[in-house]
Image (cartoon, rainbow, N blue to C red; front, side, top):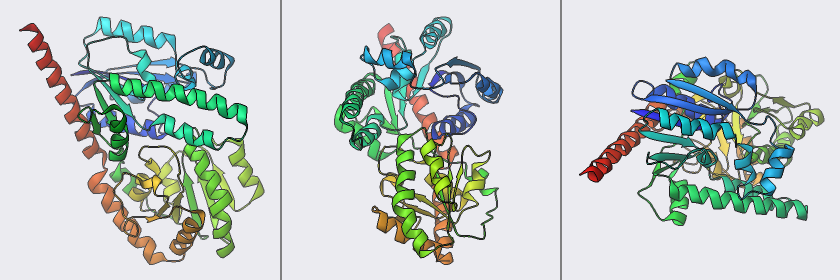
Length: 408
């Protein structure tokens, strides 16, 4: 079976949740499917990673978008387009032409698009299209806009968010099959498009065996870990909430505690935390994320916006790192408070749970053990890939039946 996959990033190196997901699924599905990958890149240096992906893909082509989002071109086109900034930001005309040419030259059984903003690159076609929504984009931006106090900027953001919602919902309806990361996301989307049979859950996963290979080496000082790429607004908000609202309470009770913030593309604001407080350490892209999880006593994840499964939660459990998280951070995973994680929803509650966990080594061991067992049985990539494999096969079979019906 031949599949054309479109992604707004090159799925390697593994710096973001989307890259981790796509790379691991490509690895697992490569033995059964002939995948051609069309991916966007921001820098020419990313081409060096193409050979890694060619191990699992029949063909890999990349298309360069602007390195920085807020270029004059992107702003100008957004102002006069029905598409939102998110689509314009990822709009590369060469990609559209290349997809059209590829579909004329080769026979494909399926088209697989990661994120709705890759859908405009697909021309009208009878080929079944899978749209994977790693998160519900407009909800994350709505949460951010609600916090903006400068009225003119807030109105501009709300107009752009309305565009995101319009097109996101349009592509939910127009695709052949829609994949979400959780049952909660599926239920939310179904409440809008009312097509439950179209939507299926294929959650994110984790390479349990790979994480288990790394031994935990905890530092002398009790250490809190925060993980998440700063290209995603909910992560920026989470770190800000952690540093400004949770951290002072924890530090007052445990003066020697350390805070380690790890994530690709830290903002200048994030680096300021380190300058103001020497007990805070900021690390950008880390070569081996296991070093972060295995070098901290607890992961704290105060996520209050956005949708989708958080890789940081699955990876922390696979690494044996105890977790304190907001309810939204673990939404849809099926974890239980006090069994695999500790869950709180206010700064005070999250701070006190963190203090409790840091002071209780036995509770740390209990959560670590239960968390590892939990992800091994539910979120290993082998299990996740099987679900996607089943969807691929069913869609191909349905397309063949439809084609036979038309011919007869």
